Figure 1 (cartoon, rainbow, N blue to C red):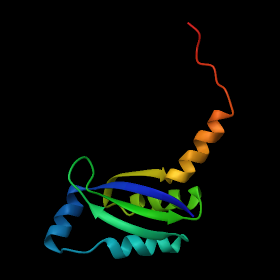
Figure 2 (cartoon, helix red, strand yellow; figure 1 turned 60 degrees about the horizontal axis):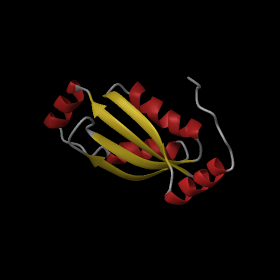
Figure 3 (cartoon, rainbow, N blue to C red; figure 1 turned 135 degrees about the vertical axis):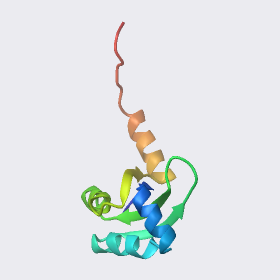
Figure 4 (spheres, helix red, strand yellow; figure 1 turned 30 degrees about the vertical axis):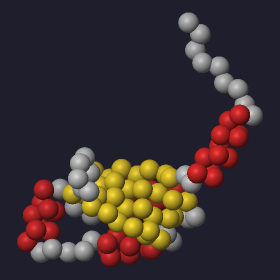
Length: 108
C-alpha cells in the first residue's frame, strides 16, 4: 500500500469543543482510514502552521483522497492537506527512471 500524510488544522469551534470535552481523536481517525481499506500508522499534534498530522497507508490515491474529503466534510477542520509519501527505495527507483530520459527546458 502507498503511504500518505495529512496535515490538518482544526476550526476555532473544534478547539473550543475539545477544550471543554478533551478527546483522543486518534480512534475516529483510525476508524475512517480503516473503512476505506487503509491503516493509520500514527497521529501527531504539533506547533506551527498545522495543528497535527496523520501518517497512513491506503490501497490507492482515490481511497486516500476519500479520507481527506470525508474529514473535511465533517466540518471540524479548516485545512486538510494530503501528501503522498515515497520511501527512499521508491525515490531511488524514480531517480533511475529519470536518468533514462531527457527533457529540454524553455529556450530563451
